[in-house]
Image 1 (tube, rainbow, N blue to C red):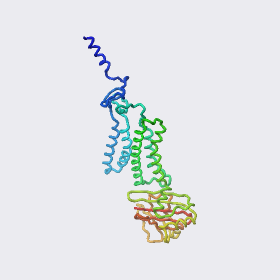
Image 2: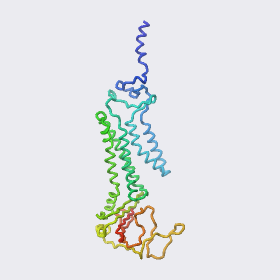
Image 3: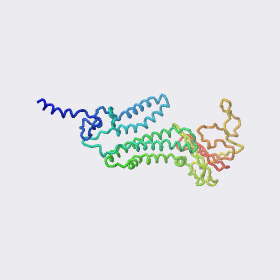
Image 4: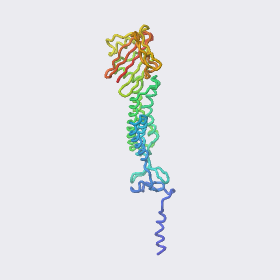
Length: 356
């Protein structure tokens, strides 16, 4: 009897705790054991939700501190831009065993993980970087290269970051849907890369194109009721500056005298105007100031004086000393006005618009 009991106990002794060299088959794991590590069998499994929890906490903290310090606004934007990425980690990331540090994704009941393509993290991150570059970094670089300097475009820069964040969420939903539909049938890495980079190339490319200076200039000219640039226009420059409820636009180009005449005649907002003329006898000069930078008033009204604006690009002429015509530019739908200057010596046109 004692020997019989020992033989019956042998199978129980053989079914001891699973060692690291004896992995558990995920296909035979029951529903209640889905959270166990397939490598060592441990139930101490950490789910990939910690990054999104920290990210959400950072969003709340920075948003609460934003009214106290304007510098915290950068933290708000960064934390919200990272939220789609950490959310993707929580949704598509794998669990981690706290004992053996093995990462794994639990297979559904009755299914095997064999033949399933893991989430393509590299194309997902590359798509996010591509969107950020095309929607936020690229337009700023083009603006600097166009001669606008480093003056901020507060409203437009924040708007581009918000648009980038929205498209990151759109890309996240698209990636999760594509992966869930094709993970069992698609294995080629180049196909996954193409599919995952599609939102960044298409959506980011459209945003980047809309921010090209030449495209922005055409939109401005149409809205200001000015004609398109003449065909002979050269040395074309454009930049804009935006703030809350205000902004400025600067344009410069050089063209043939007849083409400049055509430009003025085809601009509806300039029709019927008699231009104000400047010359060596009546100039527009910088306002003289004293040692404390206070303006010195002049009794004579022969010349016109102006205070230099730090937001004006170096290529825009503020001082006038030669034969120049000035037309007043009324910006439709906005308060404020601008000017159209025609330098008759160099055949250069300067356009300035201030709106609020």
